[in-house]
Length: 129
Image (cartoon, rainbow, N blue to C red; front, side):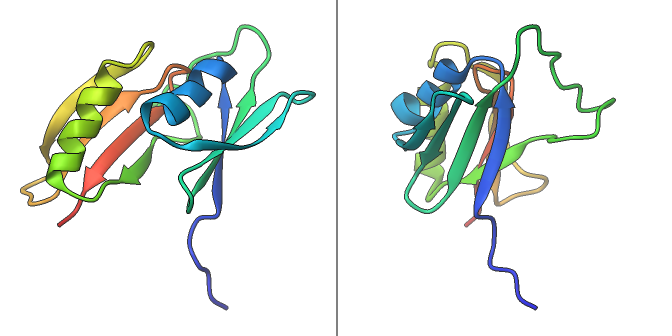
């Protein structure tokens, strides 16, 4: 049996439009599909898909130290310069909260940063030389 990698990641979000805009307007991904009756928006960068599912009103934010669930997910970037540029762009995007700026991962040479997108999902951007 062989697995081939992640096909898509499904995220429950509190603000569907703001979360979709994070991926499309900020990161340059495109909308692959919308399901207004669910409601859901599927976004892609051409190789990965993230499905965004609107929660009901009054969702509880995820507590990574108390809940089972998604701690974060990481998006690979092509270069150290790309990491810096993406961090600048996402840190200025409406509703994004920065957890930490680009820094060495452990003793390096990989670097990463961590943000919360507008619905509070923790997203890491990582460059591994």
